[in-house]
Length: 318
Image (cartoon, rainbow, N blue to C red; front, side, top):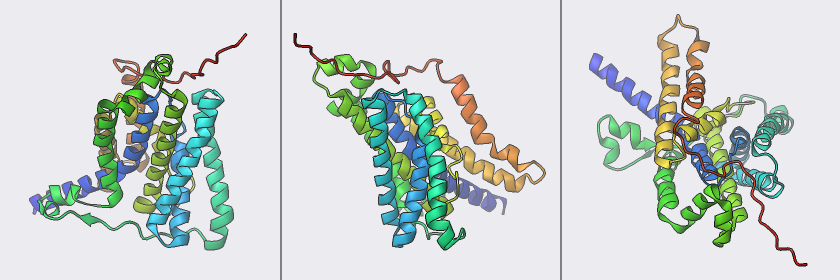
């Protein structure tokens, strides 16, 4: 009996860990590309919030989860273009621009959702969520199968992104150009790389992936939209990228670690009835502070041009 309960607990915890990790993974993957190109994107929370609302509204009105995902992706791409213009073309401070986006999306999502949705449909509406995909043969493996091979399609995509991004950054010419833009944009420009285009591309991809992560939160985990439902997950994703040293495989491991801690604290809240739930719920955020305090700046080699605006020199004709 004890062995059975232990198995059920492990399977439940492992499955929840993968689902809870997915928003972190999508957002962290996009931020990894951004930082490799020399842009630090602190607007992850804003992208995720926009994706939460856009994905839910799109899925609800169309009665299609796929449409909701597409709406979230397009929303994130448009925000990526906006941030690209602000940070790459205008040359605004990247930190200030990211924080401004977070504040803008916090207010805008609440205003738009309440005006166009809540007053008409109420606050108790939900969407059905994604169906799990059972991978043939692999899903029947004891313990491992139910955890890793009985998940929704977006969970599989989020995990597969990281080996793909690792190969892209380390084994392709495009990856070399992205890394060159982050390390020495002047040299990359001299070698014929369009730094502006590369950074724009990375910010658009980051916006799309972060919004996709946000839509997974509202569509697959919660099933509805609530104000500020990301609750700092964008900053946790940023901490994961820092913890992973902008290496895709390390970021994948960091995402799993934070997801496991988040899943564990939900279960501890049920078991530890005499401990205030607020103390348990703060564990992921406490770990974020520890990671940013201990790891950032200590042995982590950031791209040399990270956060530095680059403007192509114009030839002056006398």
